[in-house]
Amino acid sequence: MNNVRHVFCATLLTAIVSCPAAKEPLSRIAFGSCANEHRPQPIWEAINNLKPQLFIFTGDNVYADSADPVKLRNSYEQLAQIPGFSALREACPVIGTWDDHDYGKNDAGEEFEGKQAAKDAFMKFFATPEDSPLRKRGGVYDAKIYGPEGKRVHVILLDTRWFRGPIRKMTKEELKAARAESGNKVGRYLPDEESDSSMLGKDQWNWLVEELKKPAELRLLVSSIQVIPNEHGWEKWGNLPRERKKLLDAIRDNARNVVILSGDRHLSELSVLPPETDGGPFYPVYEVTSSGLNQTGLPEEVNHFRVEGTEIYNQPNFGLIEVDWSQEDPAIKLEIHDVDGKVVREVQTTLNTLKPCQL
Ligand SMILES: [Fe+2]
Image (cartoon, rainbow, N blue to C red; front, side, top):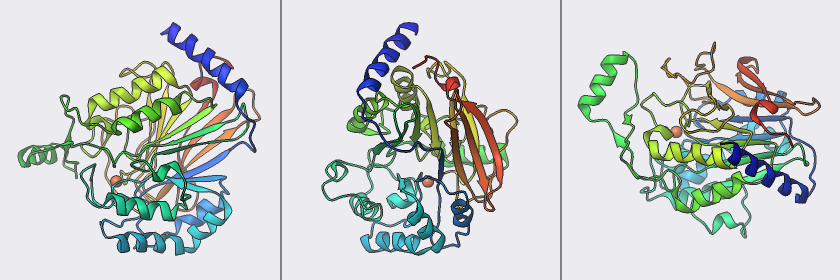
């Protein structure tokens, strides 16, 4: 492990020296998921009041649930016309990835026949240039680095839909038993230890490893579905255990300072993977799940990785990452805010906590 760390840090130092300078550091990044355009979305006012420098959609940005290009386009147009969202888009960059409902079908993966129509609508909404490499490859995965050297935030947007192979659904009997045991609404998927389905597909995996090697002080890895919480029966990386391990291995071997952002769940929570757990890296990996902007309500569930002393939050909410770059060891706040902008869940850490070797 020490050798890996040494080589990795040396590579990072070399890369930083040659990296071009950039602009203002990002200190306030808002994000959110699960925004049903057919229902009111008052939450944008609270988001605008906090004046984020960047907003990241983490999936289910519209509920098109269709392979029809007209319906897909209409859904995005409805979102674009919401005054609060429109004001946000005027005030700061809005980027994102998708999940199943904007991909076009509940819980869909690589087999979905409407995915090209969904991608066309997505690219139009996010104003992806005609000559962008995104248009020439599958899916919508992308990455951007913001801020000057020493204060860079690297946002990596994964696509967990376009390439995702089959996952194991519970049988009727298994679902009945799971419902009886929890007494609550439960998900219908089971981890399949033997599955060799891919979550990201070969090209996106190769791309991700190269992205993780790029120099940045803070890395936000955006996955529409949850990575660390591993016990519920809804969609999650843990349904493909080999792929979850591959992701944690890739983070461990290539990247420091990773914080995961996710959505999808219709509940919010803060999780942390302790150092060297499940094959993960030698620093704690936090995951902030914010869901949704107006789609919420799932009940309490077990998550042994939930940050101690916190509970789920299942009313409309958004996430906020705040970084105080003025400190020698920059403070990082990972927060969930309610519809009025009030902080309802939070955990604080520092950059050095996520970065065991010094630059
Ligand atoms: Fe979803």
